[in-house]
Image: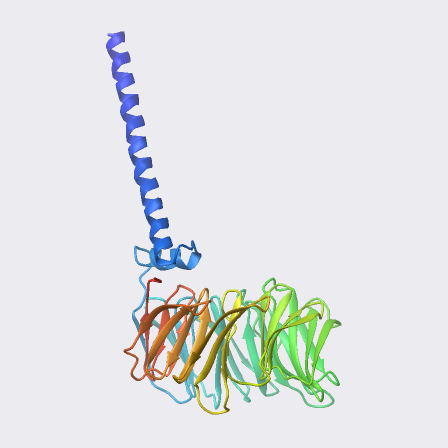
Length: 393
């Protein structure tokens, strides 16, 4: 009997090992197939974007095909945590990733503005005093400022940089609020008021929540000032003599990009700068700085009209791609490794080198496009935003 039991035990062990080998082979085959599919759809490049698009089609949470909202005046839009937000003169409407309207907040904004990063958004009245911080579940904080709002921005961690006009001897101030503490009635962890340092236009908090970059305008041009958030003493600054900057964003913990009518400049938190693109002989018609290590510029020979040149530039100043076009460009949006360009007769998705990845000619009524972090693009009309998904080929 002992011999029979031993034979049965060995046979059972062999069966278990064989089952493990079969299961392992299936898992390996599935992984290899997944990697192969990503490589095929990304020209041989293994990328996170490719995995996201592929995995998004094989399971996980349901995502919307269309976000439908009530039309309003002066609509502005943002992608919030895979969902969607639209602000108008009468308030904001917010949707989750499944296309469900999670809430509507009604309040007046003469000039609605909307900014978002990660899971958080901020809707405010540009030149007014009303501001709401929110996520896809609801309002996180409401503010009524004393001075008129100049700009507001969030980093991916939910830190808010709020720029407002000041009375008295100061031209403006910037205040920084931590997540969960969006309260204008209390002293913020950081506040700096500009005097002779220039008029504040915008500000941004670094990804590591330790530094602040402030864009100011002086009589000699734009000046970017850097602070550590534990001190109101200037850490460094960079004067762009004779040049103007309209917008800035952090690309990592120690560098910002500043874009203006004449140049795209990278500036370190130590004040050192590098001109990545000089286009003083062109008109800057549009731009997007949200690509992964690249910026898209729409340059034109004339002040009016969207025809001209599409250029992508990396963080070292290398031109990645250039595309001359006679088609009118109405909207551009970069995110991840892709760039969505809305022409007057269709949508084209390019990679960072301006190689065409996908197109959609059925864009009637579309006024804006928005590239998303999951590799899809939104086609936005006055009453809806439809999702355009693609496989890079």
